[in-house]
Image 1 (tube, rainbow, N blue to C red):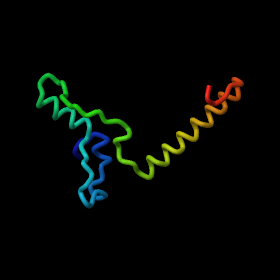
Image 2 (cartoon, one colour; image 1 turned 90 degrees about the vertical axis):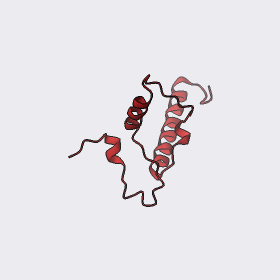
Image 3 (tube, rainbow, N blue to C red; image 1 turned 180 degrees about the horizontal axis):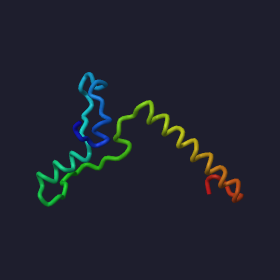
Image 4 (tube, helix red, strand yellow; image 1 turned 135 degrees about the horizontal axis):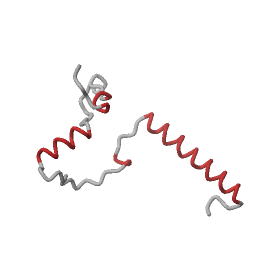
Length: 87
């Protein structure tokens, strides 16, 4: 079989029926940019962060669980140290 990056293998073309998902493997993109710019420096002025990623049911679930767990941990730490949660 043909070798693929794991992330390439996870893209499901059959789920992208309307062809709206702009999918590019980050490793493949980096290699392409390096071959174009021989210095290896990517002249990309984008400052993308987590807020720029598309939201899914799974990402929302993970985010809610993470925030809930962090809040629980802060409460436990505050209780153990005798401080307010805002300290």
